[in-house]
Every structure is written in structure tokens, then in C-alpha cells.
Length: 88
Image (cartoon, rainbow, N blue to C red; front, side, top):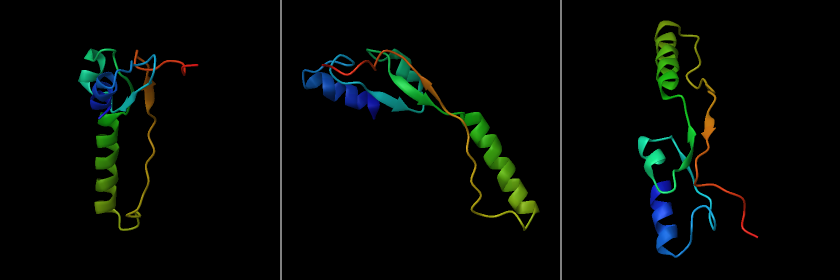
């Protein structure tokens, strides 16, 4: 969606990041190849899958495991060139 937003911003005659900053989510491979390269939030997909599988196995083996368990993992911001200071 962020890549589409960058195209729409450009089509409207605005510039990224000079006029509008854009941040994506998920750090897809294409993010580093856009013009300008897209700043994005990266999430630990492998760890998410591993922890989810561990939780599922625990739930199957232990009736005491709550079915609404919450798991929080760290994400990080991958700063590229699609963000900048607000225009004055």
C-alpha cells in the first residue's frame, strides 16, 4: 500500500519525502528498490511463526493454556529515504 501511496503522491505533483513522508510495514523486498527507497517497519516473521507454533503445541498438550494468550515481539524501523523532516 505504501508503494501505491508513493505513486499517487508523485502523480499529484508532490515529492517524497520533501512534501510527504511515507512509511510502510512488513519490510517487503521491493521496499529497498522503490524511488526513493521506502522506510518501513520490519517484524520478525520467522520468530512469529516459531512462537506461534510453540504456543499452539502448548495449547494442544496442556488444557490450562489460555486460548486468548497474547505474545508481543519486538519490531524495528528500517530508515531509508522516504521519510524526512516536515516541510515548513
